[in-house]
Amino acid sequence: MIEQPNFAGVAESLRTAANLLTGISDTPRLDAELLMAHALGVERQHVLLDPARYEMPELYAHLVARRMAHEPVAYIVGYRDFWTIRVAVGPGVLVPRPDSETLIEACLDFARHERTQGWPERILDLGTGPGTLLLAALSEFPRATGLGIDASEQALAYARDNAEELGLADRVSFRSGDWGAGVAERFDLILCNPPYIADSEALMPDVAHHEPAGALFAGVDGLDDYRRIIPDLPRLLAPGGIAILEIGHTQHMSVSELAETAGFKVACRQDLGGRDRALLLTRA
Image (tube, rainbow, N blue to C red; front, top):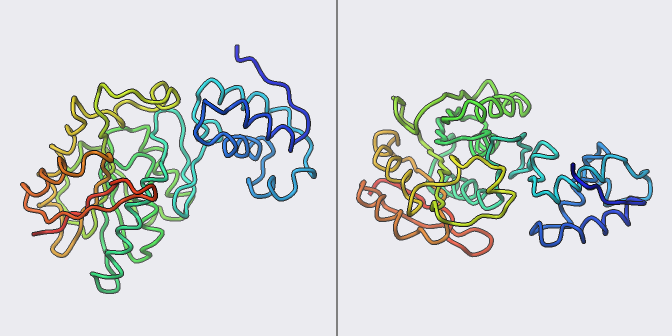
């Protein structure tokens, strides 16, 4: 049984919860606010603007106790905000990370500077999970259609529900698959956030004990899935297109070598923390 903390009053409870979550979370105050908003059934900004207007919800202590047991906030509240969209997630599905927004920034910059209006027409998301990257991209490119591939039926169920909720279901399809195997079409934009963590790497308990290992780990050096994905990209990428892959911050050189061997010109984009985060692959 999870022991529940005692709280009194919304504003004071936010401070208490943030203190309790320090050491458990990198963002204890944000976690406390998101859990309070969920318990109250309102958006977080409403709690921040006027916490005194709300009575203390009985559910809050239980939610904080779950977070203290290292359950991801996104699983507790049922969603994660990403880019400009809200993505429903739950157990068995990878939680979207802010660093992955680097891929959306990169494709928008490419569209502005390199391509004509109307690009891209077709988008492919390999390892789509709950549809995070694909749906964010489709929200920015209103003329585009997309295909999301994932090996997890559980993740694909979330992806389809998210597409419906965002009003994008008529522009996207999702398919169970093994990366690009069996995909015959060509795409102007390919997005991919594969597993890239080495099997021996230690992770925070909320990740290691809750999120799906198959979406995180990729062999001894974390490169197993890149070795399978990258050689298949030349046949999937349309002329003038770009493939954008998320990488671990130490993997720039090793993944670039794989891409160059496959015939790509490679550029690297950093995330907001100044770490290498995405590789941009175009035909050499």
